[in-house]
Image 1 (tube, rainbow, N blue to C red):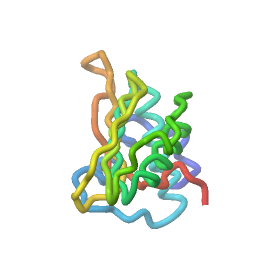
Image 2: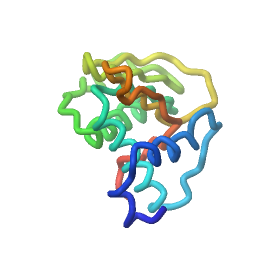
Image 3: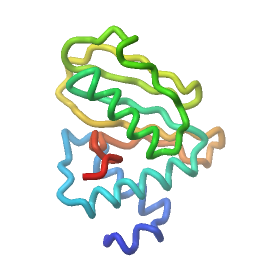
Image 4: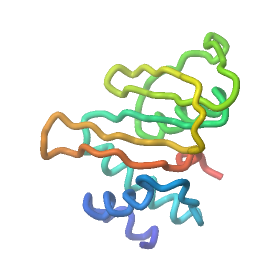
Length: 144
């Protein structure tokens, strides 16, 4: 799919594309074009859902918070994150869980091998967008 067509992306196409990442070890994003398509797909589904939950598997607390900030900005949240200096930094890799309904997060130690972001779209309506996509790239909303 070319970047010219990402603005005409359907829900079905977005879900199909993002499902390539579901339950994958780590799918390498090959190009900026592919990154743009992933962004467009997750934005489409997120905008059609009521809120999102994010699960971030990162090498450090700093990386997790930086990733959270970029995803929240990319997804249109106006949440102010707690200053990292107020957070007890966890040594080593971490799992950060963000609840979009409460606009809060927790950070825990993580020993798994995965690195990336799980985006879970939540809708009150049964026929709404309800699905989990990922592991998406940590830098999805960071421009190179």
